Length: 126
Image (cartoon, rainbow, N blue to C red; front, side, top):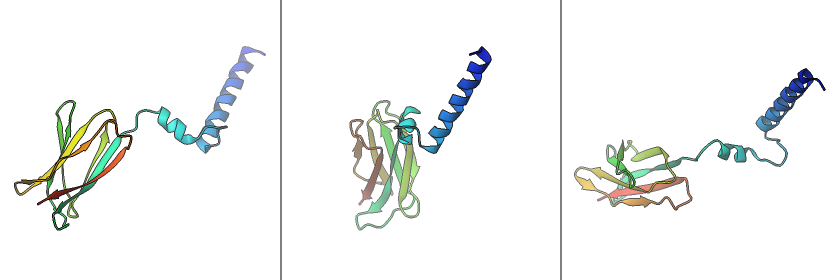
């Protein structure tokens, strides 16, 4: 086969494989396997800040501390008490707590050994 024919054949095979991949019908390989190959999965932490009685606290400051670097990210709780942190490393331990009106919730921990990627914490401020 000539080199021109070989190039055309390679392009045709690549296009066919790409089409099968995009349609999810690549023989024996699920699309999720390809998603994992793109890079590390990021973690998400979300939840609510509430009073001891279960009422949402709007405007509470929620702190998320990276135990490795000691850096702290913060978020402000919404009217329904909700907060959210995204794009967190799986290889890092975290501490999370909330403060409002000079009072603090108990801290919650996220371990790098925990295999979950989504965490939901209710942070109670008395």
